[in-house]
Amino acid sequence: MGLVDDLKKAGKTLLRKDVLQAPFVQEVCKTISNMYRLGWDERNGGNISCLLDEKEVADYLDLNNVIRTFPLAGVYENAFDVTPLLGKIFLVTGTGKYFKNVEDDPETNLGIVRIAQNGVELLWGYKDGGRTTSELPAHLMCHMARLKVDPENRVVMHTHPTNLLAMTYVHKLDTNKFTHTLWQMSTECIVVFPDGVEVLPWMLCGTNEIGVATAEKMQSARVVVWAMHGIYGAGKTLDETFGLIETVEKASQIYMLTAHLPRVNTITDKQLKQLVELFKVDVRKGILS
Ligand code: 13P
Ligand code: ZN
Image (cartoon, rainbow, N blue to C red; front, side, top):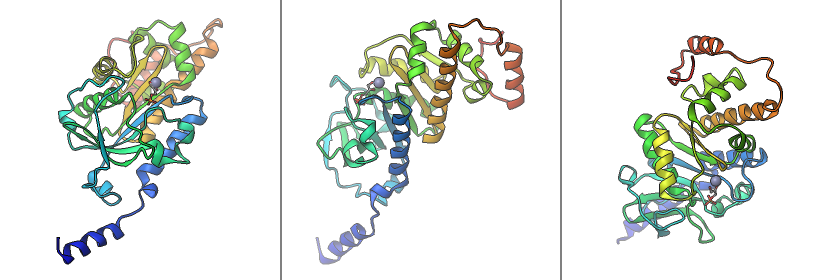
């Protein structure tokens, strides 16, 4: 390489901005702290992945500088098809990392990775030698499923909200019944998640199987409940996805506060239909009578 090339490279490096100040890193940190404070993410519970814009990332990182590569895998090292995501860049929480610590040390607890045929290319983060969440199969499979339905989908969020988890112990694990109960728990629910929530029975987490099952459910709803474990949400932005889960969790809380008491009042199906009409939402079929 000649002197001119050397100077060009040095110039680019000097112009590159500090990734810790990038809006996508800062917003993930704030969201994660918020989730931790809500008590949803004990220990290393929960994980987030955000699809980033390559051009935006290039303002902060040298995209030709792959720090290391590791297998594209969850708890087991068996591969899965990621063809539609090849070359895409994601910000992903690290496996075993505590949400409590992310905001204070993003570079250890988060990673920016590019999906490649033979594995995950690390462009930034996981400073202590870490790697992507063990739920990577479910995350990437959900991204693929949601992008087919909504090309603007960017975020997949998994967390362990307390009341939702409690509800999966005492409520029938039937998608329609679960959705109907949640819709009745506060007026805003049917407007915020008219597509309802899909419910999966207990399954082994971190596996390709739970990834396939979750992604399949994500074709028809942005929220998938993992019985006795937690929830998956998907959306265009962190705010939208967080708000979706927050609304489901609030409804679950109302349910858990009232389920053992005599139900004197409720929101009727007729009233739910009025909300659907007023807010012109595309409501999931087969639930309202
Ligand atoms: P990770 O620490 O691998 O992200 O796993 C946390 C979790 O919630 C598993 O479902
Ligand atoms: Zn989990």
